[in-house]
Amino acid sequence: MQQDGITRTDWAKLKAMSDSEINFTADAPQTSSAEWALFGKSTQAMKAQWQVPESHPLADFAPTIILKAKDFATEITNFNVRQHAMRDERAISNEHITNNEALRNTLLERGIRPESLAPVETVKKVERRLSSSDKQAQKKPEALPST
Image 1 (cartoon, helix red, strand yellow):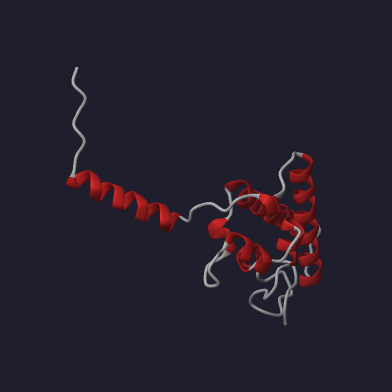
Image 2: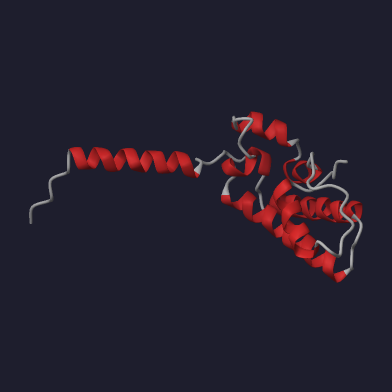
């Protein structure tokens, strides 16, 4: 069975939050309507736009503001799941989608269009660049400025 609306990471957070309280019928979602709600397009479309390799998560390339928005939507969902004693995965998924839609609207009202943002360098890419830069510096250290 598929859970429409919650990413694999968000599902893990929710499941860890109250595994014994919620009626889960599967381990993780296969699709994400929540990402559609945030970006206005599918995860696959965003991966294509940002040129994300199929084996990498979209979040690895997402700007910090998107990561924070996604995390905030999950926290709102966590809060409302507890507050309203939600037990049904469909209700939880719908709640999560609604929260992502609300955050998209907030971003749009502030002039931030999530699907128009440029991807960021992955941590691994930055690490490789810094490592290469360090190796170059060790080979040819810059002269210290004279005073």
